[in-house]
Length: 252
Image (cartoon, rainbow, N blue to C red; front, side):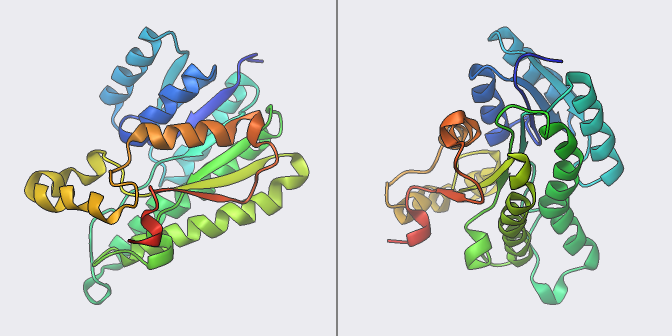
């Protein structure tokens, strides 16, 4: 059995996921990065190893039940336990108003944001039971409360599901000492926003005006909170969602 704590971070080949992996690696975890871009995965692992972090990459699609189950089970068996599962993978998936929305698009967005949490968590539970201060950390969004902007209604719906499954998992797993929490990042400056950043830079820059603290978030802002929630210091925190948005959710 691995003596170091083991963390799996889905969707970790860039953006917030990679910063979370890096922070957890510096916290002393062996980090297992997941993604669907194998070349980027190998590059990211090399970057982490160069910083003295134990890291490896598993390529699988979090929306595919069989792939998730097989890979997380393999990781759990390899290390003999899982201490932390960070369900970071997710995304907008595109924009569509309900009238024109295809069932295919609906199912894809729900799978990317909600099914992925269920598949990964279910597969990890037997190994989390063997972990040290084991926990699951999910990602929800302001859209879970305000239902998202134009065309992002199904994204908001999926993230509302994540908010609730976080609390449901926390209830279900409390008897095993497994904590389940969520973070809700506000507007974080990552490739997630690259399209609007490149096509409408003035709109992107103006977003900071709607944030109390007057700036966009950085991936490190999220990584620090994930690090805390995973730590012994947070051992009495479960079923919570922490907003990481500089006060954005309250408006100004």
